[in-house]
Image (cartoon, rainbow, N blue to C red):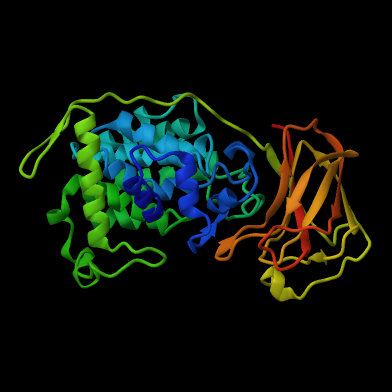
Length: 425
């Protein structure tokens, strides 16, 4: 979030998606999941197998903080910045959180803040549907957050397309975790501790979700009304630089305040040392965009008979796969791996590293793309290649290693651990 914030402060508002992308890549910032895909060669975030994940949602707070009472501006900035890594509901997660922050400056009822965030979403989106569900279920079960949580689980915690979460308990889908933020806000009812408790106990990304819920509630309450035990450690650290950046807490507060002054003035308001006036601004939901990998069907590791290997493939040390699934690796050109599967989509999984090499990928006999297994330092990813929207039938993927590599790679290793296949809904 600080890197995006810094870029917005350094560039004329609004910073472009390209500027935001460059703020992440190559600056030693550790990246995971969807964020790490900004370093890959996808030409659009919808090509990113993690496009619906939580990444932008947990980095969008700064947008809401610099757009007080200005939901349309919050949406406009969110759509520019978030498109670096997310698409569809993953992108709307940032719109939703930023819009709730924007509303929180002028609203004390958590339900109305959630409704304001919902008003900034395309009504037909999956994200809007889950938030409407949580609002309805919480009204039906006003004293039983566990009942509402169970309804969320039964209805929405399934078919996660994220390669790490497919057919696994792990789920960092943006809209599901956004529902947990809302769960905390609604059942916390303005109480800081209870808001944190409920949003944490909901599970999944249970550090980020309570942080988002508490941040929004903190704006609603104002700094002075946040319980002292949650602020007592701040003063000794206020001037200490955060990791991977030259910003401290005091720096980021000053930067955000200065940017908020510019945004408010541009919207026709005023921002002086003693007086802030913000014009009323209606929400402006973005145009609907959705994408769908399908329903996860199988996880096929490289020991499965569906795989066939020819050439110089070896079994790498377990340390390379972080004691994960079995793996097969090759560093010489011409090694081939073939996967036969039934379905409408597939994600190839493996190890990406600073020694990663390249391979051509053929789908049903036609070249369909390439694998580049190089990844910058401090970056984590395991999705080597994917495709979706295929006829729901039998397919063959063939991987052929190459001799070339990325400019900064130290080697030509291509390591496969398996695949996730999907079927049409």
